[in-house]
Amino acid sequence: MPILVIQHERFEHLGYFAAVFEQHGIACSIRNLGDPLSLDGCTGVVVMGGPMSANDPLPGLLNELRLIDQALKAAVPLLGVCLGSQLMAKALGARVYRNAEPEIGWAPVHLTEAGLQDPLFTGIPSPSTFFHWHSETFDLPAGAEWLAYSDKCRHQAYRYKHNVYGLQFHPEITADMIADWCSQPVNCADVESLQDPIDAHAADPGPMARQILKLWLDLF
Image (cartoon, rainbow, N blue to C red; front, side, top):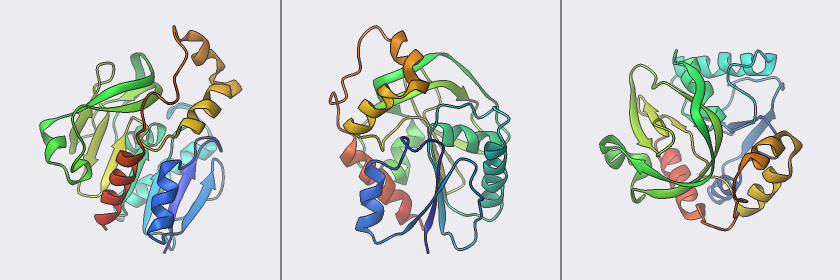
């Protein structure tokens, strides 16, 4: 049975995650923003990032929030990345709002005490360098466990119950994806605001990305 993958832009795709699904023989049912959505026949849901806000009144995002709510009620495993983590937090009743400042580029992510004990981060050093590209953040949802933070953003990862995870950072990203993101018109203002250009090869989250996704899959 496939994993439902929701993409908000075609350039914000699975990246390193794709090889993990292929390695484990897991099919992905990929849906883009605005496509019809259904949990039928899916064993889990991955919600990727995007340049829009979780608060934008787009019909596609409203449909996603409804689907996330259905998945939560049905105990379907969920993994949200960046915008995906914000949409999941919103579906859980938490507030999504502007971060104190944008966080773009490579930066250390620190695990909390709970994060150090969490199965998803088994073997992941604290801190570890991951890629970031967001200007919004969220309150920790009620009942969620706070797992990670960075210097610019308090809520970098959380777990709800045992199989729902939100990651504000981008473990899935590859160097080619970073170069592609920087060239996208929707990201031009963000790129121009940076003091220094992004070095796409400054770090390689690939091994940690593969480990995080595998450990999430191991949960179910």
